Length: 136
Image (tube, rainbow, N blue to C red; front, side, top):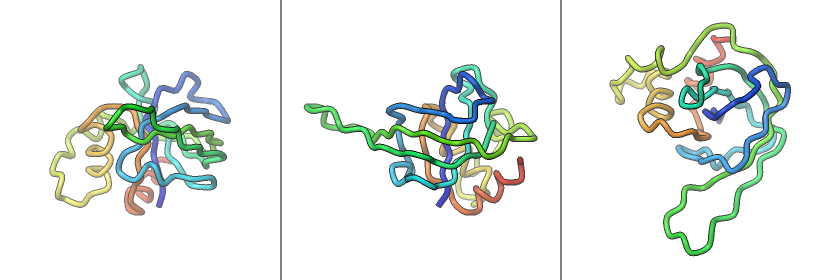
C-alpha cells in the first residue's frame, strides 16, 4: 500500500519534509518507515496540490489525549523526497471526478482529499499510486 499526505508545506523544494501530529484517515495510520508517499501541498494553506514523491524515513504515532472520547489517530512523519512532480494535480484537476462509485484512481484521490478538505495522511490503492506515478 502506498500513502499520500495533504498538508502545509512551507518549502516545496525541501529534501526532507517533517510533519507533526498529522490527522490520519482511510488507512493512513498504517504508514511506516520505508513506505512510498505522495506529497500534496494543501490548497487551504496556499499550496497547489501534488508536488513530490518520497519515502517515509520515520513514522511515530501520536498518543491520544486523555479525556477526549472521539479522536482521529495522528502521526508524526519525516519523509525524504525522491522526485518532484512534472505536471499539476490538485483540487482544480480532480474536482470534476465526483462519481464516487466509478472506481477511477483520480476519483479516489478527490474523495479522500477534497470531499472533506482537512489536511491528512491517507492510504491509497495501487491503482491510485500508479496514476500518481504518471505525474513524475
